[in-house]
Length: 373
Image (cartoon, rainbow, N blue to C red):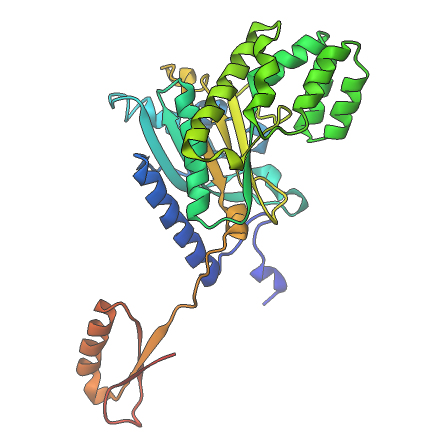
């Protein structure tokens, strides 16, 4: 047999028994936390229509796996969970009382993850809060994420908060020319913060630039947002008020020590509409979760609804969890053939008591014997 017979498509992975048990344990813990906050589990199909979910998704079409269905319709492998859930909410769940609190565990598929050793299949666990426009809902999502990370015994972690409307308004204030703003946003999209700040330093509005650079340093107290509350831009003031109120609610949870504000944090500007946040943990260079407010999505499915949500990147979260998964203990029950019925009966009793039992014939013995492997 050739070596290629053991290869997988690039970007996909096998999950060994040990990793599978840890993944299921994490999903179980997350389900328990999400449920305790009033969220209900939903599931969506792996295949969706490109014309509906594919077009509405925050993931660009060139990063989707596309195929043609039996009816010649263009399909996509689920690129994210938010758009399929929006489709479900505006169809099967359209008569349910709002707000809706939903959660999921599922794989999503993205072709760009094939490059540079990245994944094409990503495991996600996440939540969506639909039909609630207040900052209370935004704060609830951040608090729920922190609670979930604690339950998963995640290594030292921090949540970084941004606000896309605040960033957009501040950039407009310090550099009105659209080409300059596009260049600055391009730096942020590529996480090139050195290039971003270098270009800011070249701009003429030194006071505005100074305020913006101060916000780029990562703020760990809500008081640092206070100067923005008297800004000349109404958009800046409103967004700063929202972030301040979110922080105050999270203080009531006792979660302020997990928070940082970084105005450079950029979600997709034409998708997110308000607060955006990411979570980082010790030992992992990539975000372990991301999410925020996206009030424009549901209108694409015929009913405009405010919504906010986040998703854990389970592959990264698994690396940060300190949950110690003990090796599965198995009991091997040896028996001679003539005692098979008695062995089966004993195995049933042991399984009902919580043991994992393997039956093994041994004609060198004259009774049923069991021992842990």
